[in-house]
Image 1 (cartoon, rainbow, N blue to C red):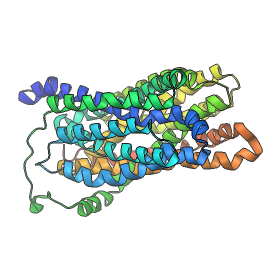
Image 2 (image 1 turned 180 degrees about the horizontal axis):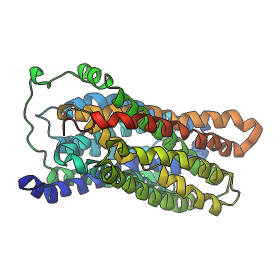
Image 3 (image 1 turned 135 degrees about the vertical axis):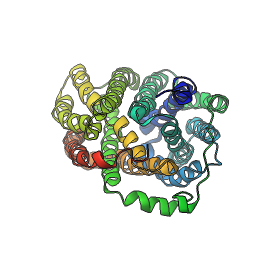
Image 4 (image 1 turned 90 degrees about the horizontal axis):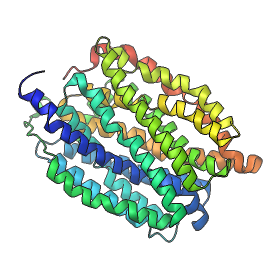
Length: 424
């Protein structure tokens, strides 16, 4: 790649990627801090495990997913400034995170979490379409993986900072201190992110489709649907296991929120960043010669993670459990770059934000919305027989469910050869 496009890739596009990474770190910090604060909140507000699952997952995910689609359609319009859209979303979700700390009961906390979901709905679809528009196809998986580093990095910070603040000054102040800086970051986004001009398209040219028409086009691709299914299955397990693993270390191993936040959050975050980076690199490296290999690493990684995860939850010493769980954390993170880039590579440029929102719709409604809630309900069901150890048995089942996305990734491999990057 030479000329102005190459200069842009080396210069302003990399600035954009770094800014978007910081925004996504705040996105997941504000989203995931509730996991490490869940046990103190439960005790303070006298909540059930099902209510914890509802608060950490479904309340956020319902509004995040359903609002994400129409907001993404706005982001796909040539007249929309995606930098301003992302900045406004950041200000909203950060402010609502701070309001979580003022909640006096479950209903108020639920409403604040809904507000966080409303704000975050405007971020990633616009960011994905920006990246796909400005990064060449042969570097797209790595660029998407770079942006996705915000997931483990933000989760790491949420665990470490949230756990420390919960131990030292309480969960309420933790929410306030974490939410406030995001409002200021929104000003930085406005100053540094430039949205390149986009040509208007007519319906005859394949553009200017309504939301429902765009969704019909996307769901008509079996390959696209398989990628959605695989990514959603990964998300279901990831969100469910993350929420209940933090609680598992507190209940089954007697650790404090601060200890779990530091050890599980720090090492889990590092493992997630390693896996996310490797997934993008492997997809670009081996997918360059055979497009099937874009998703080969997550297919194999999800399967290999199953027995190690089971052993990690079975261990009676928290140090052994933590050391073992780092392996599946790496392997389960390989899918981010391949899935995000595949979704963008299977659709036309004017459909990219909606395609991303559709992926996030499935991932967050099924994953964030139902993952923690489903495992919480199973934990309540098992509690009469297993007591505080019910979470351990829930996680046994979650470990074996990793074979589902492994199979889906393997099934999608042959379809990528003829369909990926048709639109560059």
